[in-house]
Length: 480
Image 1 (cartoon, rainbow, N blue to C red):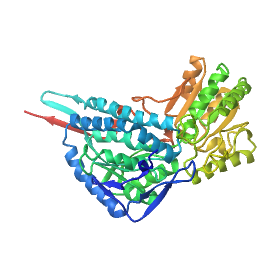
Image 2: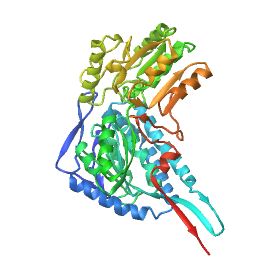
Image 3: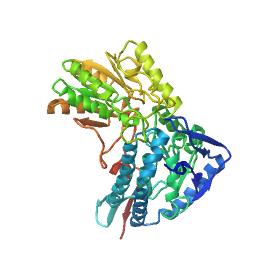
Image 4: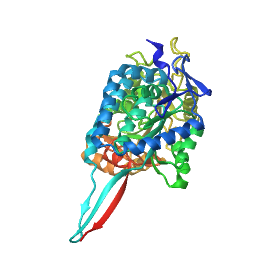
């Protein structure tokens, strides 16, 4: 493999590359080897990003929808030509399985093309109250949009999320996670012959740079994917200027297994729902299993057997499905949760330890971990772990089960496994979440994805996301 794929030209602002003297090293979480060094954007660069985005947006908003869509279609084609390169970068940088990162690149292109096809459907409404009167609405862009992204889908969340705001006539400033920054900076190399200078800017840095941008008076719209604490901090920073903020945040998502479900099928869905190709580092991971006592034993047996067979190893090797945790800090956090589960009396059925086999001993590998006899008030049952840890809670009373399912601060997803239409529909109605699966897992372009409670504000990957990047203006007119 050519290690030059990890070299970055710098941060990307106003169509130019910037390399501040303040830099940090990026390490491979699988073996501790240095991958690259990345500049940290300073305030002067951040200010230039805002100014150039403002200027580019004025011209961009005057281009036709057809021109905007054509530019994004051209970008999508260039991405596919670099599919393997971007997938490899994310696999080495984030620790996620190569097969999953290939899927991320494909999904990025699919979602860009979905929005390109959808943009013609963003139409206003008209009505008339009397003769010589017309009332109509129009969608107009916010201006400069700030996107703040996490580490678990570095390329996908950076790139596919540009489609809706750009198509609605906005410009962008993107700040990706400092834990996996390489692919978003390499992506900027594709922009130079497609978009005007300043329309898309990618900057780096930690919370202090995020705060600077969030509070900047010329940024009117903010979209965040991250933790609950991050989302709350950003919402507070944006509040004094009443900025429009959308938040896709964390989850402590239940999978509910009824007594009529096939235990083996349910166990397979529990594994799939945990997103172990990202080590459970996914906001939608079904990390709480609420299983009916009548099928508990068979379910647990199948769950453990399936988890034991999942290949764990260097993520760029195609046969491996579980790679390392993204960083030492994240690794230590997951291990502390595992310790708390043991200390609070949950029964450890599998894993709970670092994988120290010869080729993995220098990485942050955690074996798939399963707890049973978990109580709803335990830390591992209430808080988002963001690691390969499954907590199993048994139940026999429907109302008590629903109470447990809805008892956390989160409300992102729920998975229901049952052969009863009545069970499925009743539970889907009772679940205090934004997204429900029944006997399946996965997401589809066009289906709104977003959370309730502290899991977020707004929805993504759908028509409403696109409309959410424009302000609605009503025009009420009469004539003689």
